[in-house]
Image (tube, rainbow, N blue to C red; front, side):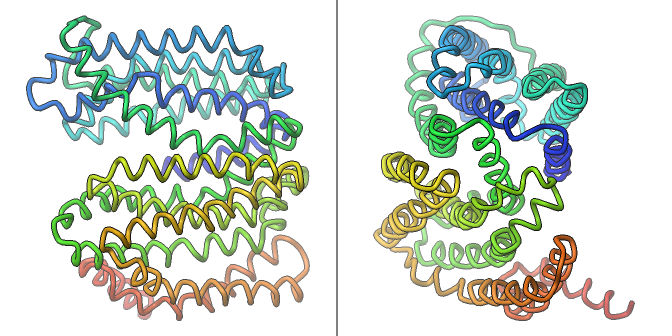
Length: 464
């Protein structure tokens, strides 16, 4: 529900704000995202993995988290003019300074959230997440409607963070206040800093394109790129995040048996691709009518970059499954090396792509690096570990064929049907007609309870 709500809120805000507003917001979002990946120095995960009484370290963790967040915010506040000037966006200074207040708020929330995760209080965690979404969305939309521009995003982030922190603290199973135990600081930092560094590396890959596009082009171009990138991330948000709730635990249980792990990997990969391929192909093939209908005519220039970003979205979903397999095998060093390879190759490719073809060049460069460099590197590593990636690729033959048929149907639909909305409606129906029969046999890969549910539903529809 929160994902659908977030999608709806994004559509409303795109109708209220301009691409330039989104570009300024994107700059502030990059800074906030990178700071939040590192602001508590990785020590929060110690709360989840601590073997003894968590209250022994909770007070020190809170002090480290709040202190590090405050220092990072102070540095950001001072450096904001220089950073925004470097990107040619001096008007973003106020937005960066305000939005990054959320970093300090996040530092306060770190311990309550860690305690909720440790005790598997997911319902309480969801209550805080829902409170954050409601406060953030309401504030942002209201201020955008009143003409606050990109500052509406900043105030929304702060409002959502404040309310969520209040809920997390209220529902936390243990009340914790800042404290200090010097003997605990060293072990906590030795545990947390490598994790924080790895998280910073991953998020750098996700945000370096915004920095390069924002530095080389206008804020309006960055806003168009951000909107297209968010659209291309729909499959990752909807399918991959849901699958990862169970995939890591399932792969970990099979980590001692390479053959069983390989079979589970191939099965899970095929099912995830079966769900993801049609969405990505439709995003790529109907980019212009989709953006026109959903976001409005002024966002249509973003359609030029959506096809390569949709391909990138498909690759990102696939790589997250590979990521979980490597985590289950405790190959964290390999993961860091692969992520570093991605970043090192991506930066010069993006610089060239933006200079040659603007935002479309950035999308093509990002997709090319992921598809031609990073994905093969992941599969080489998996093959070295004995997981037979060839079998994984063969398991995706039906989704691949179905995706080709959807693309072929698009040529017919867009040649015969006039108008953006009719093209989307007819194209969606045509895609279902050509895709579902091809991938239907993959139902045999589903666990037995899911096959039973699908069978019952099909019989109910038949009666109707």
